[in-house]
Length: 174
Image 1 (cartoon, rainbow, N blue to C red):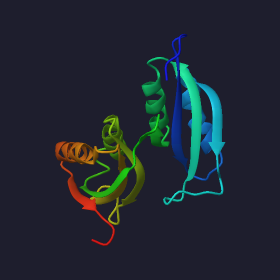
Image 2 (cartoon, one colour):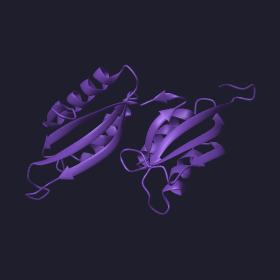
Image 3 (tube, helix red, strand yellow):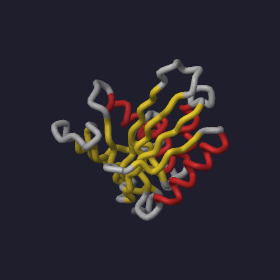
Image 4 (cartoon, rainbow, N blue to C red):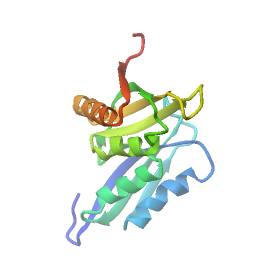
């Protein structure tokens, strides 16, 4: 929502782990990118299916800086579930296998999230033979409504470039 003074108002829905300092860490990228906190709704007793705490934040920020806020949150490792009601609600799961550590798993995750259509919501890494051997990562991803196909294509593209294998989509009961 735009206002006359070049400041826009936005609503974010986040998921945080239940650990000390997580809320503070989520609020820092907002301030660092020119955001002004209007309200925070933090319901600690109501966990998401992934065992995280849902948090809704309303902010004002300079026009054009909202994407920087989202990027800052993701760099902090915060799961952005919705931004201005644009839900990353089409969840799907994939398994990446290969030399994940050697190909820089952190960079791979950043590349996946650089597409504005996808958000990494959960990650589990398995390296039974050590980090220098082939490992696997289970990812639960969220795509914007109607953009699951594009999000999955982006994951495949990144995996191909790094010589990784994608087993997808993993569905419950299949």
